[in-house]
Length: 165
Ligand SMILES: [Ca+2]
Image 1 (cartoon, rainbow, N blue to C red):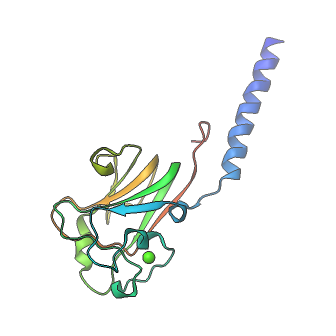
Image 2 (cartoon, helix red, strand yellow; image 1 turned 135 degrees about the vertical axis):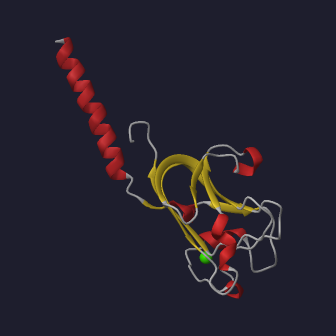
């Protein structure tokens, strides 16, 4: 019957959704991305240091990023694909200047307008770091002139499919 066919299709769609979610467990998807930033302060502060899998907070050990004193310093992660982002965890610099991160905004979305800094606001740092959204780019931006330093940025998420959340 028509109704039977509809029920079968519905069940298949639900199963596809369920199995897709099971097959793409949540993990740190930042590690396979690429990073860039508004400027680089010196040879220690490369953008990729925030996604090297190392939370070391001592700047001169070479695992943190560092911009120059830009008018609106930013760091951008390209996840290379759209992911469902479930949380973002930032490891701040520990040897100096930890207050610089206080006003950081995290933005997640698919636009590169204004270097990605116009994507929807995911959270303001030091508020709730747990929210679900979809996007390819993850930006950390300071809305005022300062240096931006990040020692590690971990983005938990999973592959996005049309049927999965
Ligand atoms: Ca690091």
